[in-house]
Length: 383
Ligand code: FAD
Ligand code: UDP
Image 1 (cartoon, helix red, strand yellow):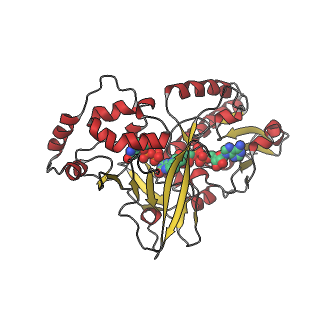
Image 2 (spheres, rainbow, N blue to C red):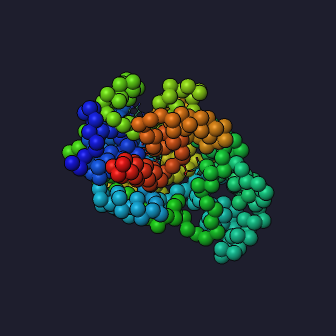
Image 3 (tube, helix red, strand yellow):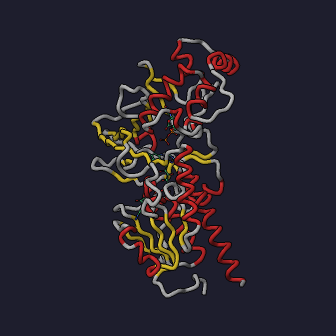
């Protein structure tokens, strides 16, 4: 028998959440272990936050905001490439600052345009930035990272307002890892990412998820909330893989872990193009949204109309972002200790491990989690 050790339950695994974490784990368990998997999601669809669908005008848009795939991991590319072809796409972002549209990450072009300079080489740009930077000896916060690299004026223009809006916190209250996602460049490379692999799933994310989950041993049920039968979960399956918010699993026993949310305003406009790049950021505190993204740049779709999404940060709503700061990490650690002590439940994914991870990192995390399950199974099999 190639399947799991059969218990009395109908399924070997109950997987909670059909985003990248839950879908990748389900696929591995079914295809590599012959395990019977029930995958549920409380939303009416698979794909988690990466879900996309055509809207009424036929434009493929991302319901939960723009998702651009990029990675340096061959392992992740090889894995996902079993389920999708790719369309090469390098994301570019502009920021509206002092009524000018300039590249972000800050590069030589940004400096020249914003300050009417004529910096011609990397060395000149590096010297200019060094003359503005305010070295910080012990970089801890998201404010320190930026001030250390570019000084206060550029920090205020590009980062302070955006971050306050996005997180409801000042950069000085956030871990350095948040703004460290955005590099500073002295060349004129205006790509948002420099990863070795940058591409969009050719037919969209949802189509890719459908192929990942197209396995006879995987049963998918959407519109089903784990909270409603958590106490009976082990009657349904021998093992649970949980990808929802970790504090919710434990009924917020130690208090709520903060997650940041967003409201998305999707608009379809009767024009071919809305903006010159996939995303335009609005760091100004005067503007209530953080960024506008236009999907046709990402997907290459052709149409007379175009769909854009405005992102309005919010404290209320679906949990989208774990908030990286020391006190939240401490609270998470308390939940993590509970999770470690919970038998037959595996916690994986952005919400369950409270990590500000991109899609590729979540795929990598899910593959590593599967490898651990696999090793345990091999070990148990040998006993
Ligand atoms: P999720 O996709 O959140 O999936 C978890 C699923 O669990 C959800 O569908 C949820 O409904 C379900 N669930 C939770 N609790 C329950 C329950 N009790 N019962 C049933 N189901 C439950 N990453 C990139 O690499 N590039 C990008 O450009 C990018 N852009 C992003 C833009 C935005 C606005 C956001 C919010 C994220 C972005 N990301 C991006 C990050 C990306 O969305 C995540 O890395 C990835 O989707 C995480 O996958 P996951 O499976 O861990 O979580
Ligand atoms: N950021 C900023 N200004 C920008 C772009 C980013 O202040 O123009 C900061 C902000 O705190 C943001 C973080 O850098 O939350 C990470 O940006 P990224 O674009 O990676 O965010 P995501 O796509 O994950 O929302």
